[in-house]
Length: 516
Image 1 (cartoon, rainbow, N blue to C red):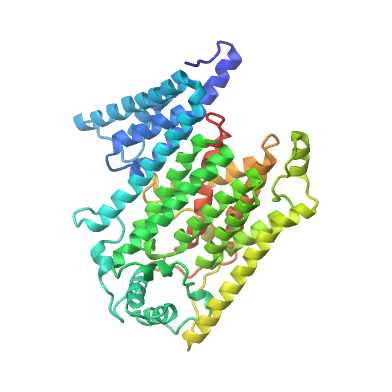
Image 2 (image 1 turned 135 degrees about the horizontal axis):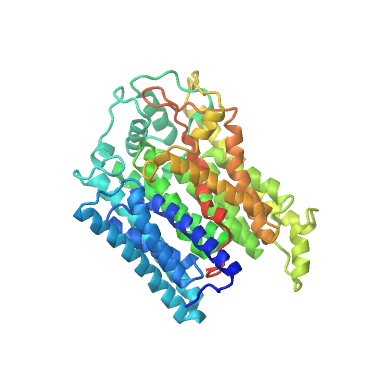
């Protein structure tokens, strides 16, 4: 076992470490307790807290005590609050004791076999990721299929019902109609046109090309059998990939122990989208493709790999060809490559590497890092030009327009405070997590002792999150609910990036390294 030294300075440092760990675990509890680990909740929440404490803490006694205290306190104070009858007291005791037991078990393994510490950390991280993914898939599928479970995405019976032309008014009904038209043999653009014209109340077909979705994601809808409930597993598959990518991003920049915490935030956000009509939209799946690209990008920068850089730009280009708004990430990457994004040159001298990493003058080697971004932008431009041509060819009579709203501070802030239904504290916690993610990225860009590669990656992430918010200060979307209220669904495109970075606000975690 490790313990805190008896000197006053060491005791203060130890208390600060425990306080930091307690705050992180409390936030983690709020993320998972109301949605992601709600089913079979107490044992799973306790395991998640205890193992996370053991991965993050350098002190065995501190990990056990902090996990137990956080489990005990958060069970009482966070919604839904326990009623202390016999059953409630049993749940409280179960979470408290199991949190401590899980923390003790992992810390005991790490203290017993320090030579295998990295392997133990890796196994624990993978185990927590599997736990999160299982709890993301099973309740949503059961909730969608079983008629007695009210918690889930659109019911299978609803998704499988074919909306008749002239009878539907909501976008999810439009997309369900679109799905059935695709499987009825129509082409992508004809099906999109007819689905729009089938709305109970509709104006003229929108004139702008951006009103019509690219066919990329919908190729999967056409490829699966003609069962509209399969829209849900496709959605879950993409969000699962995004959750894994979020874990890789957090591990690369902060340490392997942060990975499950970042993944939990993204998967919980995905669960909030999945239980809404937006499960039929392409925005979050496209954003998850972008998360995979960002994870590959950070790996490429960390290891100086041109192959991974090409793969990363390819994924970001695919994301842009799925939802065209995400092309801004290619622009951010191209601008970054001109200054700080070139893979680090191999050198036997660490001092030379640090100097090269800080250099901003473009050398011949730097142009090699710019080339993939230029190619990605060109591929996107060609692909979108083909899409525009198809729209103009197959969708005629486009004389209408959508009522795009004026942006503003309220509209911008709304983007980061919707779809938080399954977080404890709902949208308020989601808003706080996004702000925390921005703070974590900002701290990394200002850190003088961080690696040049990590700083460069965080600059990219900062631009990826803040630039859409800046644009939305002046430009809005036409989304609204049945009562005319504002719905800024564009947040789905960049909020997952911030959620992947929320643990970084609490500093780099050295336990277990960052390369697991």
